[in-house]
Image (cartoon, rainbow, N blue to C red; front, side, top):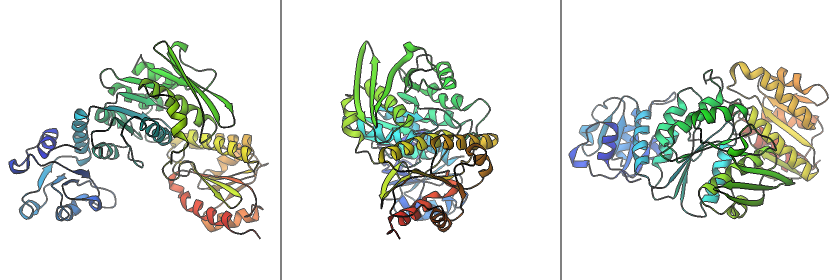
Length: 473
């Protein structure tokens, strides 16, 4: 980052001490454990702790500035060379600082949102675009009003591409994020039920496509053609939206579809992009199978073509991408294949990962075992969503379904009685129930572990690693 304290003060509309106005800020953090010499420490009040309580410690660790929501008694007297900026809301203030940094950036900004697959697509984009220049990207789950500014401010500014996720849970979220990011390419990967409990009544597609309202001058909107409501809302938000499709039929005007993907066999897919009278294509083996792979590839190919990146780079780079933890992490545990996708879950992402796991099971000739958790934050849609999940599971015919959390009765309604549904609360109980169902170490299985974060299935994954990695009886 290349912001001085004076530029930050200007962005905030507050005075800056003359003696430090040319001081260059080396980093912006909200976690006092990350403070280093020359950092700006933002005091953010939280449910568990208040960042204001750590301002003095931040100064002692070398912070050059403090961003706070109220005066800090005695701090200025003890650290006279530290600038203290007082604003009404630290998170919004970070957004204003990030927006000022965005104004200075000369590369290409890509904003990405969607109900499922954002992180995977972002990582794939970063890997492929990284073949042509440096990339800054969202790390972890930093895609909200606090995480996005911190991710942007962590960028050096000399990168060719910025790729940042935008997550929404409340009606105003995308307007706040879009105003900060102002992307050159804005992507809505897909829409489905997710975080609907906190959103308003205009529908997920309307809130996601708000990102298009904040495109930079001359920017490009990109969306999937495979969701009727998304096509409608995308065209309302940006009539020049370009679409990609992973299906033989779609909801968008054929003339607006610039990228198509077709499944050839197994994990092999072909992408074809038509832009400016030219047609580009590539074939590549995907790290996963099913609708998620096809949709992500269709989007990836279109963005690469828009940025004049050779589509051949997709095949070269994709296989080496390492996704963040708990996102389709595939491990061999003894004779079993364990797929850890337990970072979070909603109806669309659950369906996609079940398809991918079923494809893995078919390819390896092993039965599918589903270890799943309740999908949270669905509000009034929750019961019906879990009934549909049961029906989807029934169609895939797993050997057994292990379930943690509520709404098991809804799942059973859709699943029927032919497939065993076993409930568990602890990791120890899960392993015991697996053994009671005849699922033992030393035999071949493909096991998918997925659920909302409230279920803490990451510990179940560790338990299963030990269970299936153990010697068989």
